[in-house]
Image 1: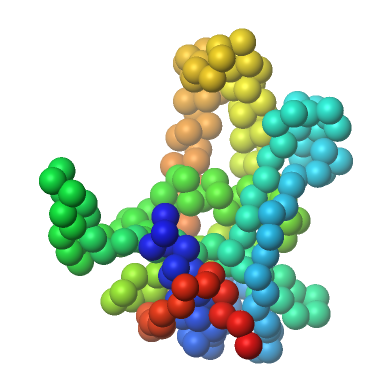
Image 2: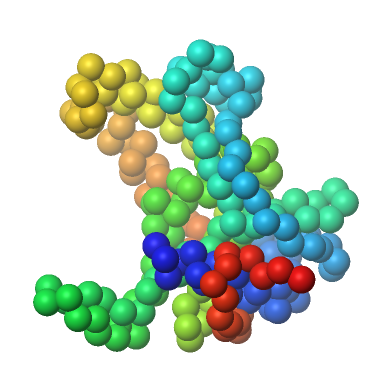
Length: 222
């Protein structure tokens, strides 16, 4: 986790340095037009509003809900009339052995080679749900390269996710922290397959140069 936090800035800098490539990628592959002049801003913690249309008729639509949904994007690209989140992933190129020593693992990658990891897809969707931003860049920063993937807000998927998650939380309530039997959740298996399909369909990355730097802060200060 510490490696990822220390290199969020590298992923964001890679996007900004390769912004023209990213803009061409968005336009040609996804028909999304990013203005030429955009600025990048640090983001905080956002909560999904209980008044959001998609959470109505779920446990998350109750103002008294004690399990709020929240997300913290790494950055926001924006200008007048345009917003796009940035979520950076970075894999530490070292692996710890059983004896406590570390070895260099140059083939570890922040993003999968053939499809988006489900956890990354879910994170991007919840971030867009919480911020009500329709676009997100999933950035995989590695020492040798930086891959950029476009993820659009999927309202249909989110609606199913909220329903399934709500049922899981209801079943988990009396179990004192234990996971319920997911086979008892109607539609859970089908929803997992749907999520896998969404992840496979997303894998059309753009590669930009990997910006490198060193800082002990998550964000550089002027």
